[in-house]
Length: 102
Image (cartoon, rainbow, N blue to C red; front, side):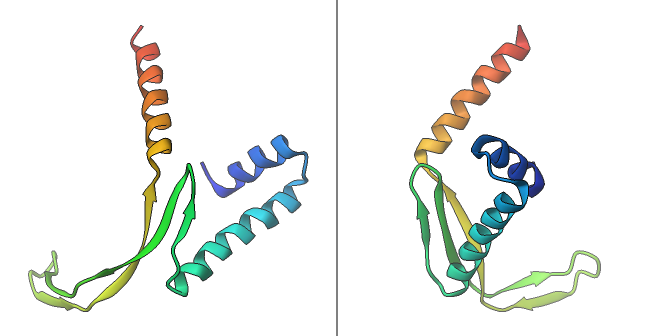
């Protein structure tokens, strides 16, 4: 599903225009990015949380040449799914797979 697909679904469900909906979706995405750039965590109950994790530096290996490469400490965005969302997705996928097997 692409951002355009998400905009279409939300626009049809809310009655907003696609332009208005796209502005809201873009605003949400930019807010999440800005908060993470500032080192803030974001928690959306029933959905999940966005966090920034620090990865330690290490010695890696270039797969083409086999040469060792030093990778410095760095920060990565991380999304952790809520228990509720895990449960809903798991149950839905089980039902979907059961119906395909019949």
